[in-house]
Length: 595
Image (cartoon, rainbow, N blue to C red):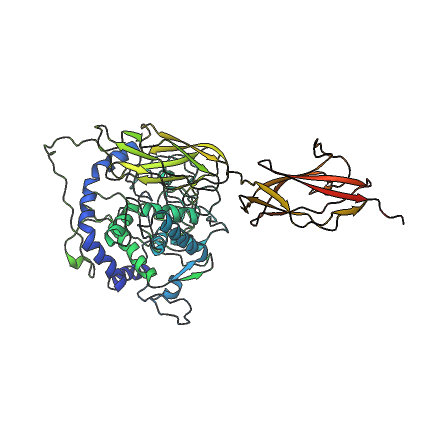
């Protein structure tokens, strides 16, 4: 009965407003172009399977399997409502509308970051939520730790060419534990070779991890916004989703969840999200997988956990030009699947090669710097200008939409906008790619900015020199004491009044001026004194010199309490600014009265 319910779910959902909107968007703006792209990509896919090297336009999840469950027929419950909306048998609209807290926070944080980094992209967080639902069931229902990292790895099947893509190991097993082939990794299902190009640090811990929902969501956001896409435009949304997984069924499923989440969601505790029950099989057929599986990978026989045992049917095959995305034979008879709009049949490849001239080389063959190769900034500020490179092919023609990775190399606190050390951008129509805004950080020193052509290891990188200089030291031309009372104390005691001074520069308040305070022997021959008044350091030990003092926003500096030893007399306290302005203050120590 379960498979029948699943089939009814897919057919029924197609009649709802949600799925209808998804199908309409596909049919109107994407399906014909997508069909042509599938046909055109056949040759490079065959080459990729033979060589084991991922193509530059390999889907972001490597073509792995994905969850095929569709949203409930009913509109999700609105936050704060007590009405339990009805759903289909065995499902709950209210439960499906809930997104685990950390996962929801990661999507919204990524949207905010992209609003700053790529304001023209208009990324809606609901699109990330839709992809996260289809790829991993929202990180297995929000099974993540406090930092947003999945409690256990979420791994796709080995991409070994057995019914799906052939991608040999690119990360030495660092992320997927497989040193032979790549696997899709984490809540957004990045293959390691793709993660190397799009990785981000979304939670600010100094590292990028595809198993972390904050890192993965931000990286997915940058990918979806690539190529100057405007995600307020349906055609660009379709292109972005199809680039994530090259399947029309996948596009329909993601768009259905996207429309569903836009109608309302609410936050649920981590670990309590609804786990999908259906997952695409080895040929993308959406075959049913029980929710009580043992956790062994049914698609590749490796015994590794591929999705917490929740229906891990393995990655779907790369479709041939005359196949449907779900692996079945094409059919033009609408009665084969009532309620579904038939997709256009793709033409078969010609049996005789066409007599057309050989295509011009299109890949990046050389990168060159455009403009300045050295950049400087002041600590805490922003670099003026940004590195820019120009990509050309073997014939010297500009290459558009080519990936260029900018990476910060060296010990430095500098970061790209979004507080990341590396970012991938695409070249424009003129072949140029400009790095995002670069923040200097507080650490001074020099470092390197390296630009590399993504997927073109043979192309020499371009290095830019960058340096961060210390902030200019605030200057003062006058230092004066506030108050004119005599500073007097007895031996073995302390001065009752605290000493406060004010720094000015050209008559204006001088804030942040460094000041040194030293007990000296004589104004004309100022040697450090070893007796008389003193301060206490952080450990409570007597000291007669204090460094690291600075005036406040009002140009004022109040010294710590001054104590006295057993020596009576008149002493001098010298205050000196970093640029050499001096103020001497007289301190009088009298013998203590006899008891």
